Image (cartoon, rainbow, N blue to C red; front, side, top):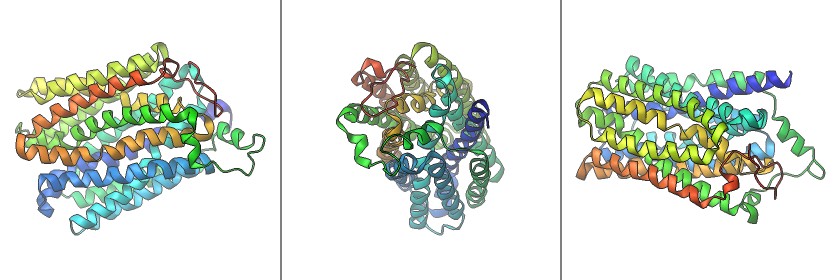
Length: 408
């Protein structure tokens, strides 16, 4: 397989794999009203369902990232897909809250590994001049997964059990594509063949070596703040629109489609801008814009302005795609999946509190107030970028431990 063919195969397969990752996360928010009604759950208990998923994701950030660095990107991606596919399908048989929480936690253990494996695969397959666009394209499958989830929800709800069964079984598709067509990352193989590394396995402690403490700490804080804002908002937006703005189920589904279409467009626009102007500036615009537009959305009562604000909010939430190249570029090949995955997925794990806390806050002050709090976390995330050295503001990719990032 030629290098060009390999690049496009990795890009297409990574797009598909992350699409299913995003789909599995999105269906819970869409199915939550039906699940709450069927199982008799309060708002706070409903938030716990999302929290269980994110706790599993946070734990897997280190384990599956380490597997990707020690045993290969392909093995880690296949394992991640298999785990969340099996346990998502099993949710169809969950009889009560506690079983649902356990299965959702176990599916989260798989979901946490997809982002780091996909981001690392693409970063290591594409040249620096087009890396930003390539990573953003692969991760722009997140809104496609959201759109697919919205379409499935519109067709299958209120039967949430069938929705989870179909979604879980669908993971067979990316498993086949990755298993049959993907080759292991050449950059990872070259690192394993390097002098003295034929038998050496990467140690988890390497990612916390002295030269990487700052990227680990600030990168994790950046992801945590952004994802608290995102998971708090995305988990409860459908419920907010239905219960506090009086939208029908079909109207809520349409709103989520509009939001995800905006995010898909935004990933490509901001990916292009990142290649031209660097990740730091573009991330600041994306995060601050997300905060402003979420606040606008939460304070709209008329349908047309609400949908317009939702579409523009979706465009600015493209920081998900930008994180892929930005965080991966802070770490050398030996610990790239572990380092980037740690930052992003520990951020997802810590943000597990957001759905639960927002649900509790909604019981006292309404979901609109909680969404405004989430908007503030987006702005706070933008402020954390000041804690990273200027040389790390663009997708400079380290190739060895101890080397400094260089501008892509």
